Image 1 (cartoon, rainbow, N blue to C red):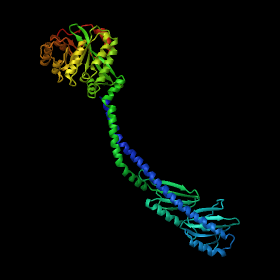
Image 2 (image 1 turned 90 degrees about the vertical axis):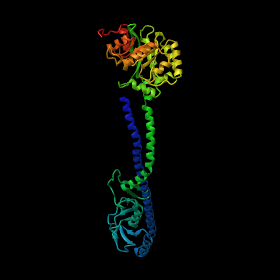
Image 3 (image 1 turned 135 degrees about the vertical axis):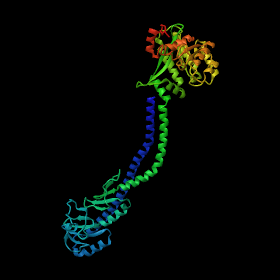
Image 4 (image 1 turned 180 degrees about the horizontal axis):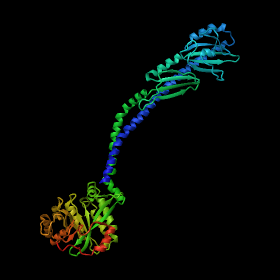
Length: 527
């Protein structure tokens, strides 16, 4: 069945996707987790660096605050003290006093005059503040090593300053970032950056350098931490190594669960159940010709399944699947419902035969008798002769119990026939076990007829056996006048097949019965 096969192919694709998807999602989310881990490490490094820079800034401002005691004192009196303070305190490259932007004296330059801008090797920033700090590329005395200048301007043109050597910060950056290959940089008031490590700006595969910036809440101080792609890859591999075994187990479990769910979803059982609910089944009817009465004496009800896209499902496929998956009983009940609805519009004589196929599972079902009695009650106004055709697709195990059920139904006027006699493994045992009324000869034996005078030993044996057992015989699959005449000559009364009429839906049957139902079968008398 193409539709079901496509669904199964689609189900296989879903199962594969369900197995691969957790791995793909796992790779994606482990990459995110690795990024988060590296980000947290960057945050920690930035906070540590900010903390250290703030401590050094605190020391610088504390130093400047202590220098205010020398306000309004000449440099000749405080020169030695400045040199001593600059030597004893860590971090400081130099400290000193200002007079109108001129360095009046310092711990490094003594009484040699010079401007603040000359010492900083750049213009003094215009901040509008009495105190400010700025990171610079170097000082006049040490031009190739960064530093941080702290200045406190006082009323009257005086002021004090301190220079922290940037090497302390660079050493601290190295201690923090060397193990992870970070590029670290720091700026005071947007000045020249104090940096450590090579800045990597190119991506490596799917991973790009991860940049994190942080600012101090206390000082005009910012820190940038750049993690290289290699750090992200290392973190991702560590997480992935832990995740992959769990992801593999989860993928297998998900594939099993998905497979079980899809198996139920696309199984014949569920397909048939949905088809019943969706009204995809219809009853078709094939007329049976009675050679004695020279007219149609009954019909066999056949179930047909048409999918919503118009594609029909072969009866041998879905009926066999229904029997295999325990759906033949609800499917037969659905057929009975369809028949009961259809026959309300029929105009047929009393004792019109209505043949219905019943499977072994239904025959052995506890509610079989009640199902058939309920159906007979629904159609009793039509006065049908209901014929139960026993199929041999599955074995009737409880032969004695089924025999009692069939006999009970025969007592109220139903007939019993063996369908497709001679093709199954149970035909002769059925003859011994059940009280029967008809034998239906399978089309395979009918097709063996080649001439009126020829012999078909098996077919002739079946016909003769039926006569000896006083059973009526119906020939199925009669397609030619030759086959009809052959059976007619051997006393086969009932004929069914394309030669007389094809199976048709309810609307077509009503029209056919009106036009052809009472007419004798026209055949070629020249045979």
